[in-house]
Amino acid sequence: MSSRNNLQSLFSSEEIETAVKRLAAEITKDYQDKNPLVIGILKGSFIFLADLVRLLDFPLEIEFVRLSSYGRGRTTAGKLNVVQGLHSDIRGRDVLVIEDIVDTGQSVSFLMDYLLKKKPASLRLCVLTDKPSRRQVEVSVDYLGFTVPDRFLVGYGLDFDEKYRNLPDICALREE
Image (tube, rainbow, N blue to C red; front, side):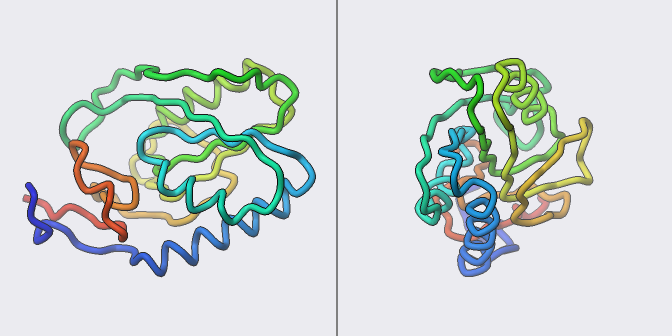
């Protein structure tokens, strides 16, 4: 599955850039004087996070966590694994979690519950893409880029079997 013929562009790099700028403006309004800890969920959020934080003109710190819920393929493996946990104490901190996609909601819900137990001053979620049609666990998204159809997405950090993350657009894999 290496051919780009298997891909259908859903959001161009220009549309993504516009959404990231909009999200940055919303976040700046809410966090201007707070020095938040921004937590990116690896691996998928790294491109989105990098573009987003460069537009935030206030003090912040960045940390990453890595969760794994997918095996090889298009569907969730159903079991969540924490591959890399937090290194910072978040008690009393304003925390903003950055995620590439919310699908079933299992992983993000797990992480948000985990973080809430550490007693941050505030905890919000910024998501580039949301696929509510697949939701199994309710998730509250504070900042949203795009609502997307029930398709398997790749590009701009999203992958299929570790491929396609580097595409500038967000694309859907065509059904085989």
